[in-house]
Length: 101
Image 1 (cartoon, rainbow, N blue to C red):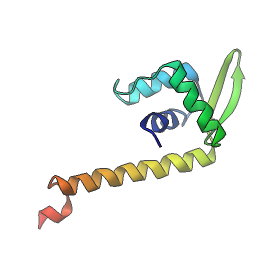
Image 2: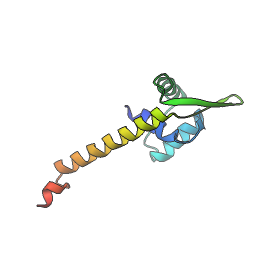
Image 3: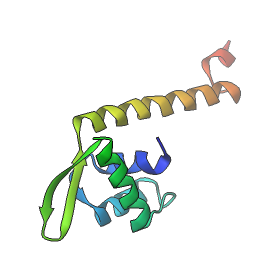
Image 4: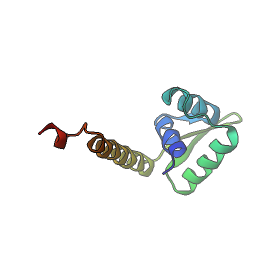
């Protein structure tokens, strides 16, 4: 899963339309991850194809998306994978449990 996909899934923990997703991603990442509409809608299309998000409703011209149950599971799995990567890095930099002997 790409970094951008991860942040889009995080944002879609609540029903949002596309531009709101971009704002949430920007906020959650402390302005580190910025995406334009082309990138966002490419990711949304892929996530829908993979059944990780669903079209919740049409709010006028705006489409509102939300995580599916499969998407929630994928997000949690990726979250744990990223946590493990950080723990592995701590071992390499002498911050892990094995260095506390």
